[in-house]
Length: 119
Image (cartoon, rainbow, N blue to C red; front, side, top):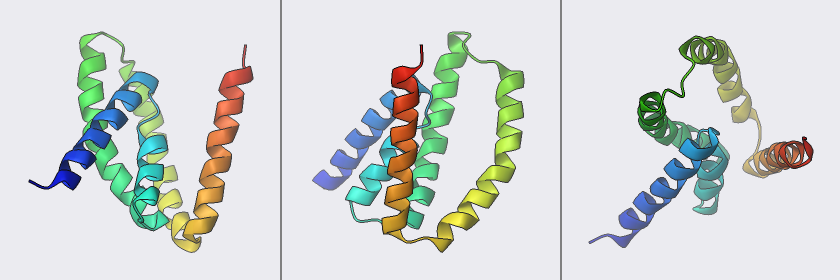
């Protein structure tokens, strides 16, 4: 039995729980985990998105059963996000993993401060 596979699945469970609970999509946990495992930034981001698609579909089903989905707003945000996702994927190709880690940390810290100090 490959214990690494069990550990990765367990990390997926934790990420799915956090993503479904917070609505942050899981990338805020998945990307740092993949970076810790030695993935370069570009592969960590791409791999994270594959995991997030699977997690997001499951979370959508669960939240839909609880009537917690505004489909109009979700689709509008999603369609707008298509363009941003294409641009972001191309931008990440032009930075190093070290630069990516600093930018990602800055975004997470900014978000944390905003949420912590917002009334």
